[in-house]
Length: 134
Ligand code: AMP
Image 1 (cartoon, rainbow, N blue to C red):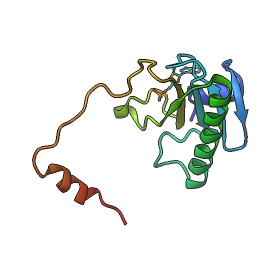
Image 2 (cartoon, rainbow, N blue to C red; image 1 turned 90 degrees about the horizontal axis):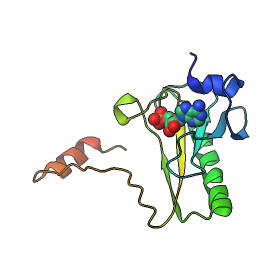
Image 3 (cartoon, rainbow, N blue to C red; image 1 turned 135 degrees about the vertical axis):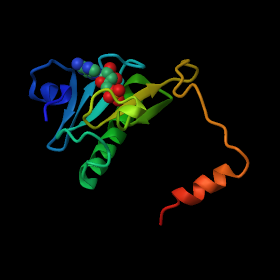
């Protein structure tokens, strides 16, 4: 399947690429939350986490870890958001698995989630018992 990111990987659309191997590549986001915001993108266009082989997903997270360390070294950020928007309901715009690595600075004013749910009495325990995995 062709996606924006397969076109970028092939070089049909220009990008600022900062890493590449056989499983993933990393570019700077064109619309950064903060400058240096990077995207670790699967080489193959898996649409979401569930469809991505474990070996690739694990590798992508390790690459994200290295990119995050590099950002801190070069940009001096105090923290980061490492995020996957997983399917359109979560806000994913490009249906091709990628990890956002966003440098964050103390007091930079960026907010991630504006709104939050509130549990009714006992609801947190009830949902927790259904979500438990072994
Ligand atoms: P998501 O909403 O998680 O699918 O994120 C897609 C990201 O791709 C957004 O943060 C966009 O700013 C970014 N993006 C879209 N087009 C480009 C492009 N041509 N080069 C780099 N990043 C892009």
